[in-house]
Structure formats: C-alpha cells, structure tokens
Length: 136
Image 1 (tube, rainbow, N blue to C red):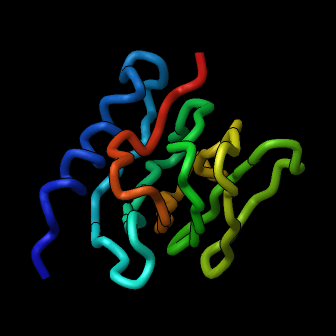
Image 2 (cartoon, rainbow, N blue to C red; image 1 turned 30 degrees about the vertical axis):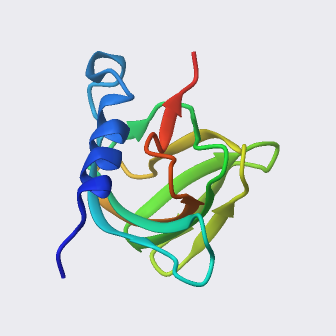
Image 3 (tube, rainbow, N blue to C red; image 1 turned 135 degrees about the vertical axis):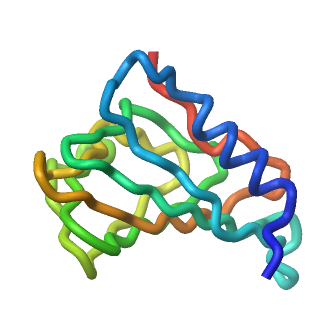
C-alpha cells in the first residue's frame, strides 16, 4: 500500500509542532495510513505510530479541532491524561479515545527502561493537515 502525500505532510507537521529542545527524550511519530472515508464525505482516516524511548514524553498538546482519536498501546506502557480524566497507565492491548477539542496534558512512556509504542487512529476533517499543536 502506498501512503499518500497528505499523511507525509501531516506527519511532518506533527513532528515539527514540538520543538526538540523542549524535551530531550522525545517520541518518534511515523505516518502509517491516510485515506479519505468514501461513505463519510469530508472525513479522512489517518493513522500514526508513536514510539517512546524509555523516559520519552510528548509535550502537552491539542489535536485538530475535528479530530476524534483512538489510541491503542502496542508495546510497553503509556501514561496518559486527557482533559479532566485522571492520569492513567495503559498497557499493551489497552486503549483510550480523545474527543474533538480534547487537551492531552500527559502522554509519555511510563518506564525509564523499556520502550513503548502506540497506534493513534484519527478520524478528521480531510482538510485538517496540522494534527497536533503544542500548548503554550
């Protein structure tokens, strides 16, 4: 399967949205899929894989205003806090969702010694190319 150009731009926007100096141990985001949803006009499905080195974290952020997101932990353990929900550690095989306009306050590897990986599945307006914006 060939990944379309918009996912490369969206992935790059996600990577460039967070300054590297803010967090020395950063996540790595790899675009995996980008496709318009044929029976839902104006919506696309975008999938990215997020790899966290031991101790790595993402800065507090929000996603595109149209984005409904399902995150699924593939390996390791990811600590997460979205909006007013309590901080929670998700293990491989577990997942959570983020509603449109949600603020993702904590997103990090729960371990200082073992890597973690998650798959983030976005249902988003097709025109939204900036998937992530750091909080200021």
